[in-house]
Image (cartoon, rainbow, N blue to C red; front, side, top):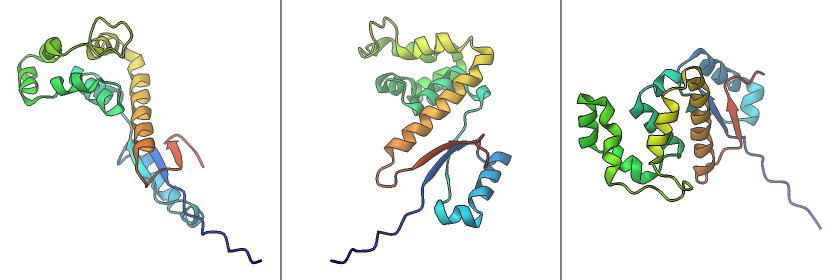
Length: 164
């Protein structure tokens, strides 16, 4: 009885959270380009970090939260219409007025306001905590990418502060 040889080992696929085109991004690519790493790992895929200042505006916060999968789709559809975005350019405070015709999503236990409204109310006064929120959103986006990738699944999720 002969046993067949084990199947060839495939290289591990890595998803890295980092700021694109930054020094850390370059260092990570250089690290994974070394011969010992190339033998075991594919070139990493980058999931972008979220700079805290990028979620200071209402629209950017909600767009990032949508990418992270925490905004109900019905609310995002109303917010992201071209007509609403044109209106917001002249009156930035009007962004969430478009939700008046959108029913409140029942999955948010006993909510009496739209999720986007509640998120903005809590996020606009974060100040130093905004960096933590940006980090959480970046991780949620990366995890969403990690699990939603069809046959080309990832094996490892890293943040750019990992050191070799």
